[in-house]
Length: 357
Image (tube, rainbow, N blue to C red):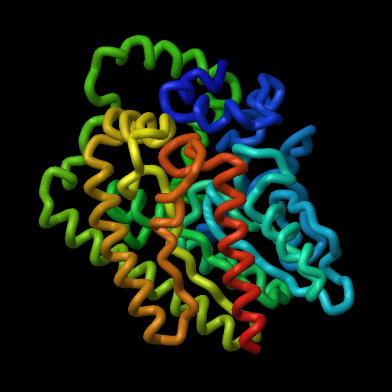
């Protein structure tokens, strides 16, 4: 089955209390997340999902902005309703939330919390997409604004993909997937080959190996890692400053959030999910903890630099340290309980800002 490799990460511990957890959900989840189903407009670094309609997961064309595909958010109000406050959510797969049904994503839970107060009307847009880093978020924001999207609030929920691509894969200015980097032959093979069988064979063959992936050569040189971390932080800061400039130009509030993940932070061993995440990362992404330690240290400094330049920037890297349940599905993705923690923190952030005005 396509999810067998997940069992050695943290999925079982994080999913076992989820009422929707079933073979039907997992089959739909893996059908909805195929990289070959992404749309990457030529000449851009943007990534858009193609439409997907299922029982649990739906990605559909928006009737606003660029009209490209977004993950369905369960909203009480509509985009064009009078006095509605439009919230645009930018981020990678941790914002898209492919690991839960539509009603349990960060965006849907944020919409429910904000609208339950009755003081304002909110419409939340989930523009998260697999692998996107802050460079792609900036380009997506510019693209949507030019196409007529008129958000009142924009949230950039990021850090992990910047660190993965910028430090671990040695490309601070690059992105993980765009039009130029897509390999058409691999896409074709992925469509005609049951890749889960290959993954199963590989897992069985490599059970006794300490590392599945070879260590990136530059990760053996701490001086190179530190240089990459600094440059990644510079790119991250610059991208967020440009999004702040757009907020002034187009009249919306911008929030920058450095996200929490399972591979950074001193999580107690009492939770099975954190232990499994560490074990998985050590084997499949050797020396990745070093990239996270250096990367998060730098991005925390970026947050402080952004604050000095009037950006509403927040370091939430420790948001899950006092969690009460297993929430990590893998190194960065979380279950519905984790999404609720994030959504509640976002709602508090927005509501406190509203009260100050």
